[in-house]
Length: 448
Image (tube, rainbow, N blue to C red):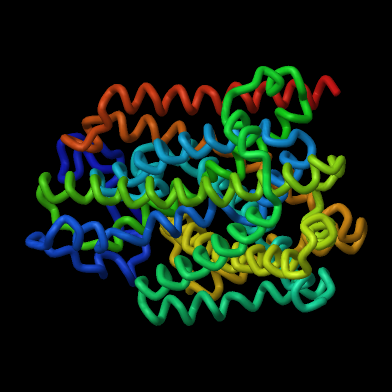
């Protein structure tokens, strides 16, 4: 049990002293040589950003991007771009918190706030991970169904077995996990590159789609999907994840070494998130070019999109590429959500469960509602559940963003690595925008 630290004690600025580091088994396991060239240092930090990027292209993104592209064409590309910009800023803050304080976001909330505040934050973070896992369960099950014909109900249960994949990868070392994730990201990119080439989108409309539109505030359906895209892109669990896995690098303890580590960690996540933007935009562009363009504006189910791709694109390989990319997204998201769940539970309440038990518990929590929905409503309602899970994430997002912004703005907690005022102001603006959009959506839902 952690005890409060008296003012002026060995850990000034924090209510409680620091406990064990995040992901203890891989903490500082990847060496960063001070004498290496800038290129070698970049390669040493290369990896965590791509694990974070996985959360920005998981099956939940597919549902919201497919529905957005089918209903509104290229108009929501602006929301994808805005979400990605938000993500870059917030993930840089997560890296700053980790490097400046030696804590992940969960540990920082526990050590900075009284229990009456930190425990609700923990419960909300667990809710966000359950919503994330729900999207991954359904997305992976749909991928198995499309590729191998496995019934959705069976596929949902089969996804519980991925715990063994996680354990095997963890035993092979953290670099192996990163290599696995990056390889699958390459598969996803190739699949979408081929599909976009076949779809032949209107590139002028694509470019104009990145411009803002006032329809977002006047059309409740567009706002609902926009919030889903924001919730699917700027994901709460990614803030906890990034602040934990960036500490797998042994970057030193002096201020210059920490500044250098922050520089390379931010560069890594920024490049990775730009890659994630191309994937998210590709999903939306594919939906706009194939479904919206042909009048199929009601396409939201991933399975239905898969069926329509072959006749619309004129090539039988297109649905297979779509399914392979979906399955790769689901597997990738499984790996990162597991680590995020471990960081959240260990950081907030200092309970350390075996990896297999932690994974099994979170997966079962996600499997139950997925099975109930598929049994009662059938496969035709999985998209509604996917989109709802992303909106839940969007509502939970302020409870991760606001602590992150306030903690990184505190010189007492981060010392010389405190966020500059312009960054804090920009991050506060992002938090305010997210909260305002959530309030607007809630009002529209209540008002009918």
